[in-house]
Length: 248
Ligand code: C5P
Image (cartoon, rainbow, N blue to C red; front, side, top):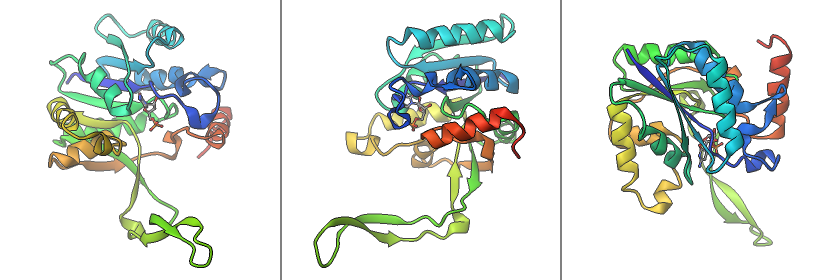
């Protein structure tokens, strides 16, 4: 059935240090957002593509229009560009406001994951078709992950952190996008988000968290190492290398 894809591209990208929004940072000579949009079109699953961009970023809007023009998608494809918000979830809500109600499912994808292979989109959509109301792509983690709490070194009182726990590694997953949802479930999750206070809202890092909070099951499918989130200059270097040739 009809499926909308939201691409969130309204982040500032401060950690990348380019002084421009991350989605406009070039990768292989083209803005990251161009790769992200092309990946969604190539996956062939979208009937509507809605992109959340930073407010008043005419260059970002132009990228969207160019990709829509080159996509070869027919007149049946709905394209929207909306102003994003302060937090990622504000940007998702701005996009949700223009999603066609006739759409049964919606995927939310980070522009910061420009190299996500079609197979990941396929697996997410397949799980939705098989009855999941929420599904996320994820990978097992290689590092041991610890939780920490503020602490002071015994002799000096120097401010550091100390370990508060070690979750069992084989139960941990590193979560990616696109995350897929039944439209009504994602709408309810984001209505719930609006009831949170600022401190709780600041802790929301993905859409699935909100769906978990309203008590719906979130299913997991296999992600991809190619779907890395480009956050640091090192990630950008890896992305460039991936575009150079086959990296398995
Ligand atoms: O900041 P973070 O790396 O978690 O952002 C993930 C994705 O969410 C990026 O694609 C970014 O552009 C998007 N985002 C957004 N609006 C915000 C913050 C982040 O669309 N206010």
